[in-house]
Length: 234
Ligand SMILES: [Zn+2]
Ligand SMILES: [Zn+2]
Ligand SMILES: [Zn+2]
Ligand SMILES: [Zn+2]
Image (cartoon, rainbow, N blue to C red; front, side, top):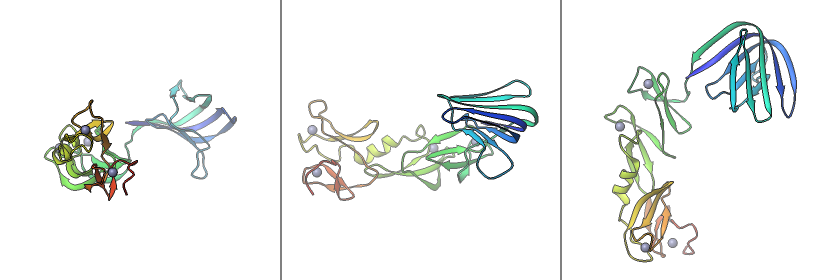
């Protein structure tokens, strides 16, 4: 991933719910997600910006950078540039360990593992904890709870979370309505669903807590509460 960094004397025009034009010697940064920031000499706030617009592009020499988002339009017209470079950037987060594919470091940010050098990225399951242990593939291992706590590789293709949860919970509970086994199934998230589907459509989502018992209604409980949020039993 690269960011485009420009510096020089420019006129910035914003058209939208508010409109303005500003002239000055600024630093303009266009991020890989097209976010455009224009900084002048003072303060931490940009003098103009558009966050994750629909489009942003640079044309001409000296360049004009234009970003559009709905009716908002930000135009940064350089009269002269002292810097016009593309610089490599990555997510910045807590260091997790070395990247298995390159000399970079893996960092964790907003539920994603990303490398500082290559484009390798792994979305982590919600609520996953990154462990100190490393998988044979070189990625860190995770602790994830979906009705049961399991340890899996950060790569789903290396070690699928669903299979690990299945090994713990598949057929462990009986359907309270028909007595058949409750199976681990994925429909968006992970669920326990009756093996008799579609004749019996009992199903409950697996929470990010451990199943610790059975409710009066016959469904499992987690954290002392029935997995059916609408269950009348206490
Ligand atoms: Zn890497
Ligand atoms: Zn692995
Ligand atoms: Zn059933
Ligand atoms: Zn219940």
